[in-house]
Length: 152
Image 1: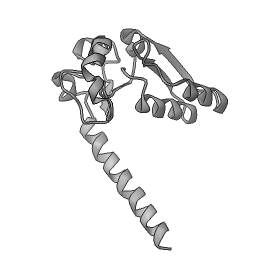
Image 2: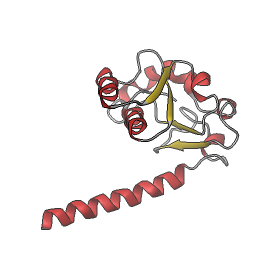
Image 3: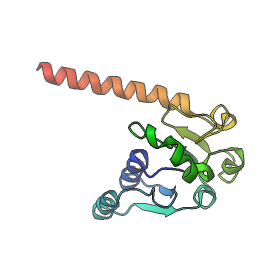
Image 4: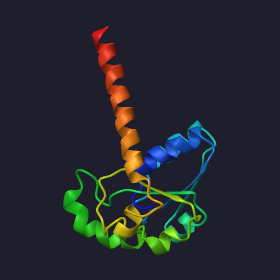
């Protein structure tokens, strides 16, 4: 839910490799890049839908993911982007359209009160801190792999 940026692109690439349906909701003008769509289509049978309606995208979802509205390097656009993304805030009302046991993800750091409410971020469906911990272990393993490879 939100910007069709690098996080959305990664989910799209995962949807090619793993058997899940991905539903993206992005404001018009903030959709995933065309070259990513082309690569996805060329690569395989990803089941991906794109809408500008967050309620449509989240309906029945098992996992809900969002990201900041202004990524690193876009901080100067933050105030302007809020106008486009306000309706894409993951709040309790929007999350209620997902499955009752749906998990909430965010790659952190989150801007509480912008792309996600405090209630959702700290709520029982949020697994963002487990997600961050898992990323730490992946990064440690990659660093070890790279360092061992460069010393060989």
